[in-house]
Length: 126
Image 1 (cartoon, rainbow, N blue to C red):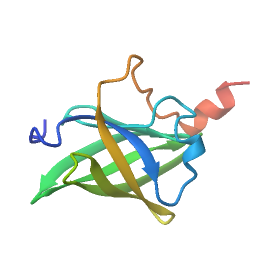
Image 2 (cartoon, one colour):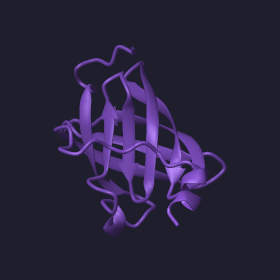
Image 3 (spheres, rainbow, N blue to C red):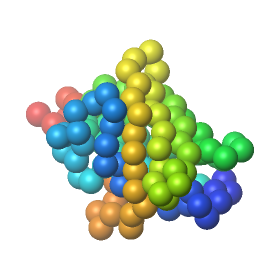
Image 4 (cartoon, rainbow, N blue to C red):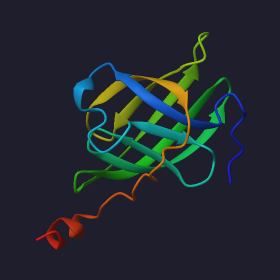
């Protein structure tokens, strides 16, 4: 279990990305990032991922592994608290795109964020 300080601890609602179209942020449910130090998750667009986060100096840094639809991918990110209490950061896809993001403090979603699907799950749907 990672110690996440209170200023970062909890659930964050992603409300904006600098590169990716915001119209589809919530296609799998509210776009969220959890920073609790235990079974953390990321959900946005068609990405479901598990997150490992730690605090370095005045920012939180994280790595994630998951799937965009059924394509396995991973990446990293970092974020700082803005003076207005929102989280501003970057999310990067390994060997792919990167984008800034803006998130506001939120409550844990009513429905848990699902595990990322495996490539084999793609063929089990039929």
